[in-house]
Image (cartoon, rainbow, N blue to C red; front, side, top):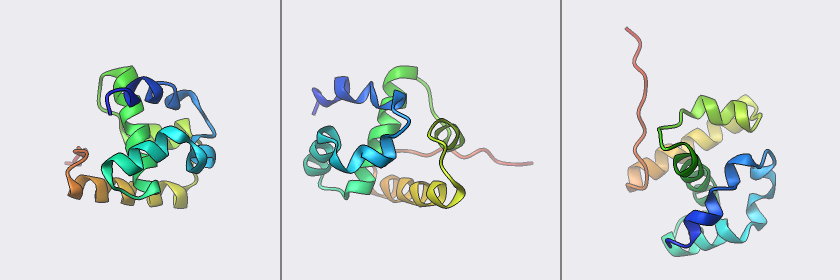
Length: 98
């Protein structure tokens, strides 16, 4: 699994990531290794890619802008992220309005 981290660092720079990810070998490796769906592997991979490059938490709004996601796509991937959080793969932090 550790060898995947070097492959993940380039994903953040791929604007067509979500279009090409179903055929990406790294994504398929992660899916198989962690026993998760391809969509979960896509979302987990891009979050990990941001973490590796930026060493700070990434908001989902940043992902929406960087990958030019439409609102319905954004909500789909956000829902997948919540599923990953329930499974213990990631921890999401939400800003609270006062």
